[in-house]
Length: 417
Image 1 (cartoon, helix red, strand yellow):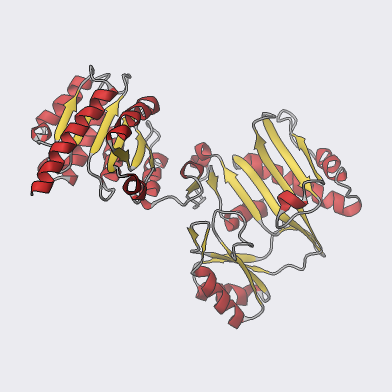
Image 2 (spheres, rainbow, N blue to C red; image 1 turned 180 degrees about the horizontal axis):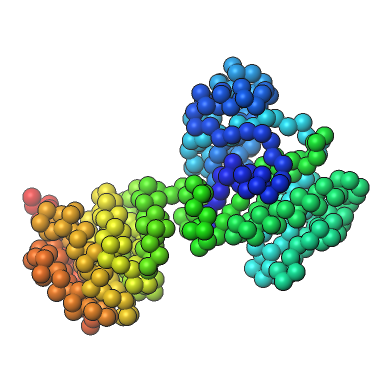
């Protein structure tokens, strides 16, 4: 899933009529000072990272004047929170909060429906403080989440009167935001009660990756498939390849971006691409025991175009310190001659004369596989001593063994040189 930064989430809330503190994101101390002058002091300075627990991690500060702001914003910009470097701050007018609640809509696989959760106590450590007073309801999507549903939910938390109606209206609007933006999670914590009414003091939104093409305005590039860390530069480049071309996939993740894992285990880092997740995992199961650890996982399936293969192969080969490249296809109907054309073009641009200086094993099995193999002969790439071409009768174990032998020969020559 893609995690929106707080200021992005609050833009969605504002568009739905949910109040948020006045403020803007800043990319420097100078910008933060200008925003504070515009909205007035005191202000809150909030690190914009796709991670929870910012308050405990020192990611939130307050300033009553320009001197305090410059000092505290400067410290935040040099901060790292859960491995995320702070590159922007949300500068907001500090709220006078009378009470803090919790409100969220999340996708609930167990119920096969969205679930709305409200807790009378929100804020820091909500998992502990709200454990006894949280209430929830599953939403029937054929009916929706109406005002009377929200009133009933929040009334069960022990709230009544005008506050009840105001909070119920926020809950209905939050559900609309959740649905409209393909969210997996839409969370307001705390939902602050002020003299002016409920205000979303903080917000967290997780969006379905598969729906991001419908939301091109979002700038956040955090995705669940890379875990808690930020995408690497190469992962971001690869994501744009898929985002702009939906003809087949080029799913690229760096398993060991720095090569530290391979080094710690005494293994050799290599680049990897497979057509089909099953054959990819099977091939990795054969390569790892032989001493190799792919720096990346890449699946180029669904019949992608030659241009897409060209771009993703350039990304794979751009990884530093790889000692080889393995490509293998499954036995599918994918048009492998287009796949080969993309790889050939990348080789001819990356390596002088298209002749790799690292061991490369390429195995084409399936539709147009003979045409694909012939392209490497036609362009002279097959003449390289460090290229091994394999065809439809090859097993994953044979591919791994062929790469091991080629790498050993290449390595002995490198040592001798």
